[in-house]
Image (cartoon, rainbow, N blue to C red; front, side, top):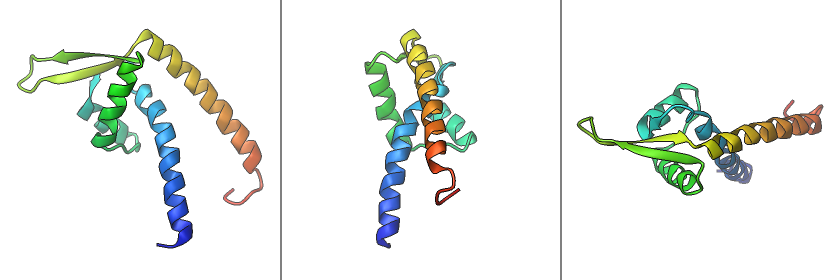
Length: 115
Protein backbone atom coordinates (compact mmCIF):
# COMPACT_ATOMS: atom_id res chain seq x y z
CA UNK A 1 0.00 0.00 0.00
CA UNK A 2 1.36 3.40 -0.91
CA UNK A 3 2.10 6.03 1.71
CA UNK A 4 -0.72 8.18 0.30
CA UNK A 5 -3.21 5.34 0.68
CA UNK A 6 -2.03 4.66 4.24
CA UNK A 7 -2.57 8.32 5.17
CA UNK A 8 -5.93 8.39 3.44
CA UNK A 9 -7.08 5.20 5.21
CA UNK A 10 -6.15 6.59 8.63
CA UNK A 11 -7.81 9.94 7.97
CA UNK A 12 -10.97 8.29 6.61
CA UNK A 13 -11.12 6.12 9.73
CA UNK A 14 -10.96 9.24 11.90
CA UNK A 15 -13.64 10.95 9.82
CA UNK A 16 -15.96 7.92 10.01
CA UNK A 17 -15.45 7.67 13.76
CA UNK A 18 -16.46 11.30 14.13
CA UNK A 19 -19.63 10.93 12.08
CA UNK A 20 -20.73 7.58 13.49
CA UNK A 21 -22.26 9.09 16.63
CA UNK A 22 -24.44 11.48 14.64
CA UNK A 23 -25.51 8.69 12.30
CA UNK A 24 -26.45 6.37 15.16
CA UNK A 25 -28.30 9.03 17.14
CA UNK A 26 -30.29 9.97 14.03
CA UNK A 27 -31.86 6.51 13.98
CA UNK A 28 -32.91 6.31 17.63
CA UNK A 29 -36.02 8.47 17.75
CA UNK A 30 -37.77 5.09 17.60
CA UNK A 31 -36.60 2.12 19.72
CA UNK A 32 -34.14 -0.17 17.98
CA UNK A 33 -32.02 -3.12 19.03
CA UNK A 34 -28.46 -3.52 17.82
CA UNK A 35 -29.01 -5.66 14.74
CA UNK A 36 -32.00 -3.60 13.57
CA UNK A 37 -29.89 -0.48 13.96
CA UNK A 38 -27.06 -1.96 11.87
CA UNK A 39 -29.60 -2.96 9.20
CA UNK A 40 -31.28 0.47 9.28
CA UNK A 41 -27.96 2.24 8.84
CA UNK A 42 -26.83 -0.12 6.06
CA UNK A 43 -30.14 0.42 4.27
CA UNK A 44 -29.18 4.10 4.14
CA UNK A 45 -25.67 3.22 2.91
CA UNK A 46 -24.08 4.03 6.28
CA UNK A 47 -21.87 1.06 7.17
CA UNK A 48 -21.13 0.17 10.79
CA UNK A 49 -19.68 -2.98 12.30
CA UNK A 50 -21.50 -4.55 15.23
CA UNK A 51 -18.19 -4.59 17.12
CA UNK A 52 -18.06 -0.81 16.77
CA UNK A 53 -21.75 -0.16 17.37
CA UNK A 54 -22.28 -1.93 20.69
CA UNK A 55 -19.49 -0.13 22.60
CA UNK A 56 -20.81 3.17 21.19
CA UNK A 57 -24.35 2.39 22.35
CA UNK A 58 -23.10 1.53 25.85
CA UNK A 59 -21.04 4.74 25.99
CA UNK A 60 -23.97 6.89 24.82
CA UNK A 61 -26.24 5.24 27.36
CA UNK A 62 -23.69 5.81 30.14
CA UNK A 63 -23.54 9.48 29.09
CA UNK A 64 -27.32 9.71 29.46
CA UNK A 65 -28.01 10.29 25.76
CA UNK A 66 -29.80 6.95 25.36
CA UNK A 67 -32.13 4.88 27.47
CA UNK A 68 -32.53 1.15 27.02
CA UNK A 69 -34.99 -1.55 27.87
CA UNK A 70 -34.85 -5.32 27.55
CA UNK A 71 -37.61 -7.09 25.66
CA UNK A 72 -37.78 -10.66 26.87
CA UNK A 73 -41.07 -11.50 25.12
CA UNK A 74 -39.30 -12.89 22.05
CA UNK A 75 -37.42 -16.20 21.97
CA UNK A 76 -34.21 -14.18 22.03
CA UNK A 77 -34.07 -11.24 24.49
CA UNK A 78 -33.24 -7.93 22.84
CA UNK A 79 -32.05 -4.69 24.31
CA UNK A 80 -33.80 -1.73 22.69
CA UNK A 81 -32.21 1.72 22.65
CA UNK A 82 -33.96 5.08 22.38
CA UNK A 83 -32.85 8.70 22.58
CA UNK A 84 -33.36 10.21 26.02
CA UNK A 85 -34.73 13.74 26.25
CA UNK A 86 -31.18 14.95 26.77
CA UNK A 87 -30.08 12.83 23.81
CA UNK A 88 -32.67 14.50 21.58
CA UNK A 89 -31.42 17.94 22.58
CA UNK A 90 -27.78 16.98 22.06
CA UNK A 91 -28.53 15.36 18.70
CA UNK A 92 -30.45 18.39 17.45
CA UNK A 93 -27.56 20.66 18.44
CA UNK A 94 -25.04 18.28 16.83
CA UNK A 95 -27.00 18.53 13.57
CA UNK A 96 -26.83 22.33 13.71
CA UNK A 97 -23.10 22.20 14.40
CA UNK A 98 -22.54 19.59 11.68
CA UNK A 99 -24.37 21.65 9.04
CA UNK A 100 -22.43 24.76 10.06
CA UNK A 101 -19.15 22.85 9.85
CA UNK A 102 -20.03 21.46 6.41
CA UNK A 103 -20.85 24.97 5.16
CA UNK A 104 -17.56 26.34 6.47
CA UNK A 105 -15.62 23.46 4.91
CA UNK A 106 -17.44 23.95 1.61
CA UNK A 107 -16.31 27.58 1.65
CA UNK A 108 -12.73 26.48 2.24
CA UNK A 109 -12.84 23.87 -0.51
CA UNK A 110 -14.34 26.01 -3.27
CA UNK A 111 -12.03 25.75 -6.29
CA UNK A 112 -9.59 23.48 -4.44
CA UNK A 113 -8.54 19.96 -5.36
CA UNK A 114 -11.37 17.45 -5.24
CA UNK A 115 -14.12 19.89 -6.29
